[in-house]
Length: 408
Image 1 (cartoon, helix red, strand yellow):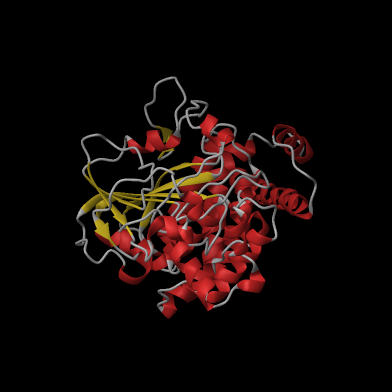
Image 2 (cartoon, rainbow, N blue to C red):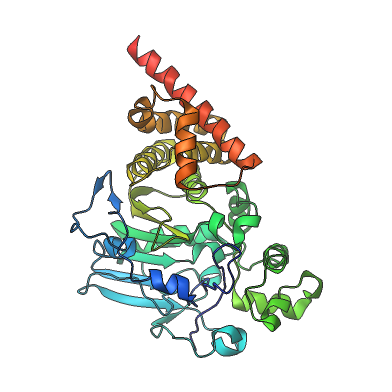
């Protein structure tokens, strides 16, 4: 029996906001507050390859905007009770994973809540990949709130690439760690997922479960009491660890910039040949997640990585109400994830893409820019905020140097 595997991130410290995302299924338990946002049309047009997809003047949910670009043979992994919206003429199949005991026994907090479509294929993605799917047989693969649950995300990304036709599209929707319970955790670096890939890991390890449970348990409660106790780090015996493997956890966590750096790193290491196609960043009505659309291409290595960095930067700066600090954060993540020569090339690509926007800021003081953003999105002063400002200063200084060199 295919089930909605549940994991329950909520908006930061706002119980009882409970959003359930699975490793192979995304079942959602929405609060009244988020439910009110589900019908909201307060969304700016998504961006596609540097330009807006043709949209009516009314703002739309970004999933719907992206969904209209998907057609042909489509595979959605873990649709939950809210399958991704796609072209009505598309031929869609669903992949899920059956779990011993079924949904209600493993996720008592979901009893009585809606169920999604029946799965056409029962697959454990970590163990089997997409083995039943032939090479180059699909036009699109959709994985919403899936990649962060996998023991070996690189292996899965390579499987997604394998089954897509040339120029086929991969839609990845990922929770932003900054606005879920993952905000207390460290981001997953590229080195970590590379190690899992080269070790051939096929199961979430005990260490990952302990880290996840500590993040859940030592925050304000948002689970029912019995379910919350399953996350008590002092009670994680073999039976409870296995329960969490069935329930599925956030093995990994990223911000939009950190996840983009992961993709750039895979390209730089020759492990993928994705081309950037589209993105959306967290904002109502999708305030806890970001979306990234990739196309199966032919570029790999440093050239492919540089193209991706350039295109992601341009798209991020082209979104409505863009925040230049995102580019500084992206630069920081690239410096963490890439080897020296790769990093130098990526920094040049980023600076080239950011130059038109940052050059317009030449007459502004950095403090004015940060102050304006802070007024729009209030933040508590912190060392991380100070670091963002410092990184933005450094990035703007680097771009000024490039501008000066180009004018000489």
